[in-house]
Length: 464
Ligand code: CAA
Image (cartoon, rainbow, N blue to C red; front, top):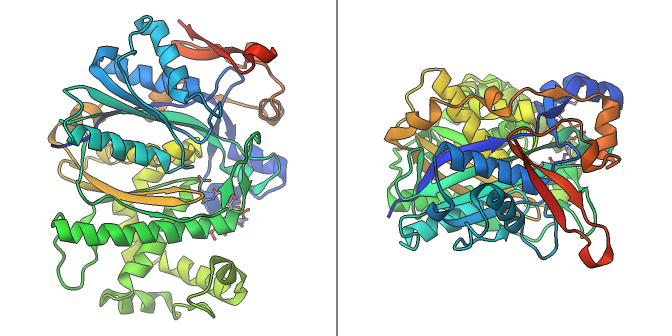
């Protein structure tokens, strides 16, 4: 049985910080953020928003747009790394909010859990729900997978440039209008790591930035190797002499903690795929230098990062490589459109990959590209760490969904924060009743109980 994404809805908070204002305030060159990392704006949650209401707002949008009643939904999964409770799942808050609109107990038949594995958990949630559908367990019902996060780092840290917030709801069924997943090719890698993690009770993560960048690339490459093997074995891709499997994937969507991480991932994969192909000689000639090799090619991530001579030369080679016409053509055709939304919104952790997918659909469609039958490859990464690589094919009825995509209209009128207001929100100095904006047709957080017997209980309201 087929399974895939029928529709996709986004909810992005309307407050944002402009990257130039932010860089100036932190004494960083604004060009580093704009060009070096690809960040122009970061969405920021108001003091009356939390990951549960972001998720509920995305969910409500997808249900209303498709005129879906709670009785049409068999599973509602929420994937997040911004969990609110050590025990109570984020789904339960979301269902509580949705029942304010659809009526008490309207979701009681529905199953679902909160999923956690940093930014990759949404992909595991999609895979598990796709398999629920493939197994014939859905009995004609849909599954909804919501990915919702607030990417928040310590003030003054280098991670602070890579913040953002938002939720994406994906409607899954056995006759998807948008994208049908390729079966029996999904591949994973996993390893115990401390590149980025958030101990219990800590609001912001502990991050080893450069280590996390390289680990992401290595883990995605490992999952990609396993994907390649399966894609050839199942026959979804037939490769000729001198080709790479990437020649047969029309679009690539990568996890985007910041927009330019997509470019880093593409060049990392392409260099390793093209090295053994006849085209590599021609490409290296264009760079005008030899591809550098680390002193200890089998070394650890730490030893590679500590090999300053190699890191410097590799950085230089990579810059030249990304200027070659072969890389440029690949980048423009297969990746560029997926990076646009990330640059406008920032990091959404679990939702970043799917914001990239949404971005690619909208901006390729606007270019007039016919998308039916195109294969999307997805590179998902979660710190800690695990990667998942999978793919899917755009379905004939995709235009019903993609024609109406308009990122700016869907976000609504955005409000630029002063650095003072941003810092007040960041340091939790405002209560839910002191929010910057009033909610409109959306759920907002009203209060969080502090008394010992009810500590942590959250109340939400739907604002007309
Ligand atoms: N003008 C133009 N470009 C400049 C510049 C300037 N003045 N100064 C620096 N740059 C460029 C650099 O050359 C670099 O680009 P390249 O990598 O292409 O060379 C880019 O700007 C960034 O510079 P640095 O690497 O020096 O930046 P940094 O060390 O200050 O911080 C970061 C970057 C490590 C990503 C940091 O923001 C961070 O720790 N972020 C959080 C962790 C993270 O996002 N990790 C990603 C992988 S882990 C993951 O994906 C899970 C997740 O969601 C968190």
